[in-house]
Image (cartoon, rainbow, N blue to C red):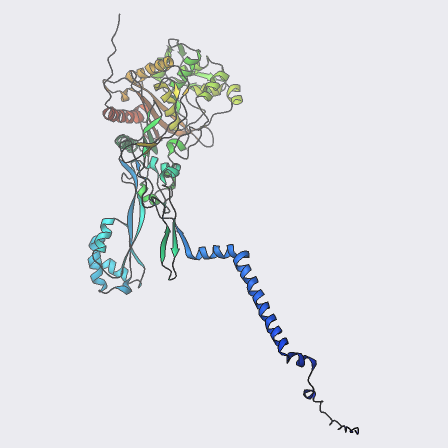
Length: 597
């Protein structure tokens, strides 16, 4: 066999060799059926492993977060509005209650009747002129607010017209049916339904009902459906917050106070009626006041009840308490006499009686009758200053009362070192100056004389009651704290009785009843120190009655003008209130004292 000769052809310039003519090793492998199956199997396995890994990641690793996102998208938790509990007085008269009201909007672009026709139909219901409504309709095409806080009756009348373009939006509003009658105690709520003053503020937790959450599911088309309805969801309790106030007495106190403020052109005043047995307040009035239904039109200073928020020097109305301190401590006797010289000098400070009168030797009862400053100073000088100061602390001066009303201010009492080191401090305290307290605290202190010597907590909350009058909850008050003995209290009450029957408090005398009382006409302290020369505070405290003491009535009038004294301004107020109190409580006349030989 001959070897054939292979003739090689030279490559043309610029041409590449044709490798297609010679198959590569890889192409040979790819052309093998087994390799292609293996490759497809590998790709499918890799994809399967990727899917399994992603499935593991979705189902295990990030499953909780995905469930939470789905729940957020599909579930809605709704907290429905639940009306606040009503507030009532001790007789069940409503002082505050939630009611459904409506806001009226109109959308003129949806009207199917002429604007004039619609205005004519709704104008008499809203007590507005049709011309004014028509002008309002022309301002814009939609979303015109026509009226707010419409009653359900008015809203029903508008709805019955079946007019297109009329929208009534319901909401709850707090109503105070008695208006300003008890505003100083009840307070008000703001537009967010949150208490801002009075009981509405301090007792917020008692007034708010428990709100249960409703869980809603969102379907595929976005429709909301209840998923879980709590038991009793549609029912709320019928509890009411009952106060110790008596609206009848509150009305009488406000009327008497307003009359005297107007007569003497006074700046302000307050009247307090307390049941000395337990400290419950039957009336608490401050003037000027505000209408809680329209609180936004009033001065913000009126929202704090000055009977417990502002301090003043009590003056002579504190003298009976000083007499009780002196008697209880054993420093003086009820029949002991003191020389009233009309004036005296304590260091560089002169002290005199308000009328400059010299009365000579007088006993504690006569000191109270004539409101003798000099007699009181000489009486309290029988006690050591540190002992006297200890009694003032026992009375709670300089401390808060722990009452259930908000914004209370603690009284002011100088520290012991200053009180005991300066002779003028005990001297001025003897006739009610040099320290300060609130009218409510002074009422509390006089209640100790009326209840046999116990310090009780002033309060207005009686408890939560249901619609049948059954007690559901009652506040826990601090136990009464003994201060004076019953014998001391009775001695002081009988001395105070002579103030009304023979002394400066004759204008508070009520025929047939033994009334104990004490007048006060105090200089008004200046914030910068010293006292105003042309401003004073008049007051009177009365206790009904001496033979069966129970009620304390306090009246304080700030900056009266003219012939203004405790006897001419405050005492007549207390008398008027006590006369109404006698009728309400059906207090029988006092038994006449039988003289014995």
